[in-house]
Image (cartoon, rainbow, N blue to C red; front, side, top):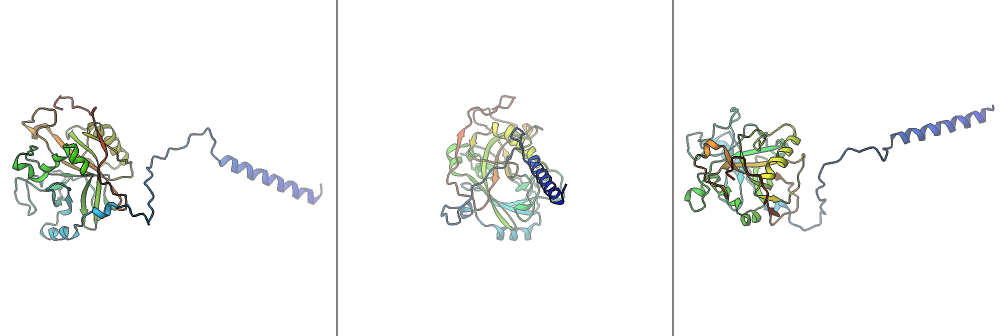
Length: 296
């Protein structure tokens, strides 16, 4: 065989092998592909004049800095629009429980009303990049009766979110860190039992998928309202938790501290450039889970 024919044959064989190699790398139509569960957020046009969430996000860096001078346990500032909740948030980094600030004030002195404080399991830092999957803030509610003066103490006003009209008009919660003011969009308003190991709405698990499971299988089925808000394992959440005395449609809880039942609000961290929602969109959850003891 001539040298020319040999070269042509070798080139042809090389081309055949190259085509075969690429064909083997291409996915087959009948091969199941890994599902992408990431939610596509809207891509915004820089010239779009739609108001952004940043336009209503308050700034609290100065307040945090000033309160930190009083107590170096200060970690942030919480504001809930439409309520009197607008104050500093603390956490004792040396405590491995949630009792230290239960009855203490900003000066670490005994104070029956307490102060807003963060669950010891939460991850914190100067900005959003340090947050874990869930940051739970606790505060007392002396009553959930809006006709009582005590209703305006600490987290008492959170119970205003049990009113659908109020909830519709207030879709956001604001929590500031030393370097960044954050906005959270509410995804659930619910009653829960913090002693239920399958309903750890106040936890901060290492695996975000574990918390998504809790939200989808425990929080949302118990929520008073079903919000039209998308979320996934890439999101970060803020939870506000307080006492409850008289759930809607249920009997009065005379010994609330013994039952471990709580009223809570959960919200998703939003990007400051997300389009602003003037009102929350939801429907009443007519089929929400009623706790086994029959209280609600």
